[in-house]
Amino acid sequence: MSSIENTLISQSGYDITPLSTDRIEQLAKKLTPEEAKVILNQGTEPAFCGNLTDNKKEGVYICHLCDLPLFKSDAKFTSGTGWPSFFQPFDEQHVRTHTDTSYGMTRDEIVCARCGGHLGHVFTDGPKPTGLRFCVNSVSLDFVEDGQQLPEQPIANKVKTAYFAGGCFWGVEDRFAQLPGVIDAVSGYQGGNDDNPSYEDVCSGATGHAESVMLRYDPAQISYEELLAFFFKIHNPTQGNRQGPDVGTQYRSAIYPTDDEQMKIAKQFIKDQQREGKWAEKTITTEIKMAPKFYKAEDYHQDYHLKHGGHCPIPD
Image 1: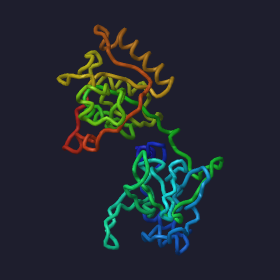
Image 2: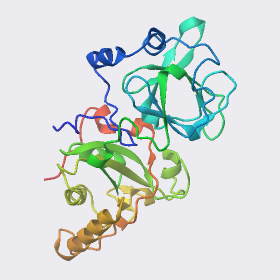
Image 3: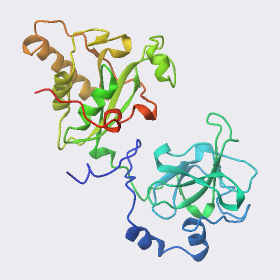
Image 4: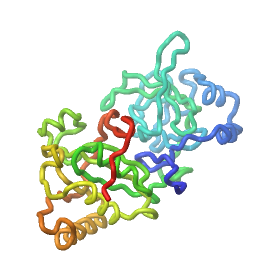
């Protein structure tokens, strides 16, 4: 596998692979005793003493230990608690939560997803749209003002995204995940009318969503054309609003390109398949349109076949 394949990449394109103990110890050498107390030993700085509590500048708040972007200024609000407060993270995958039972209380501790550095706690008394309050120690953060370069850039330019819908997403996700060059496969919903649909909503057929799969792949290992060919290998693109025994608009065949290049390739691929491919004698019903918003499906749908002890076979 390549280094990219072994890397965990967030939705915003950052490397969130957990750092080794040795690497964390190396980074921790720069910390002052007060910073180490908070970041490494779950301490709390005194209220109203942090240098970022009243910061009104526009920019990005990054992890003081490993530089991972954690929060944006447009999610910062005045909570009156004495600590910097945010209603959502820069990327939900950049901040992890753990149950904290210290001091006779049960709270949700928040840590940097990459280095594990302590940030603070998250509470459910925040403003809309999330209703959350990420209460963070200033010493756990550094601030990068808009116009200044972040110390770390996303590696998304090395990774591309593709979306496919071809029946029940359990099997589509599982088969794509087995392909060399595919870094991640995530089940979700696309192409409907409602925001944040549930599985039950989609199954009702009322929302218009398709069960789809988001792929992140390394184009140096596998091309978009190869993904399309594999997609047509693992499903029947001529069945309209069904796939095998599964019937409903949520099971339709669809390709959702992310840019003009993918759109051009997908349209030409369909033309070629309709003219002389395996499906030439039937009408291909695959929907092609620019990628609509992707809603990640519930956790119990992710890696479904893997969780239940197996893989879907890949057709010859």
